[in-house]
Length: 69
Ligand code: 9UX
Image (cartoon, rainbow, N blue to C red):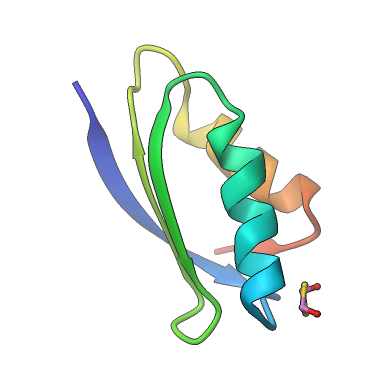
């Protein structure tokens, strides 16, 4: 099943940042959908918790240079 979460993410300044996060997360097995908004400072992720953990998702965003709170 797919679980949906919205994370508060700091550091996105434009659509390029949004795309970087979307590309990185989409490459993770188990991630079904990603939307990112630098205006709202949010990243919404639909994922299968049997395949990928919330911690892995957070780490992937941090590895791109952003802060997850
Ligand atoms: Mo936009 Mo994000 O030029 O680091 S891609 S600000």
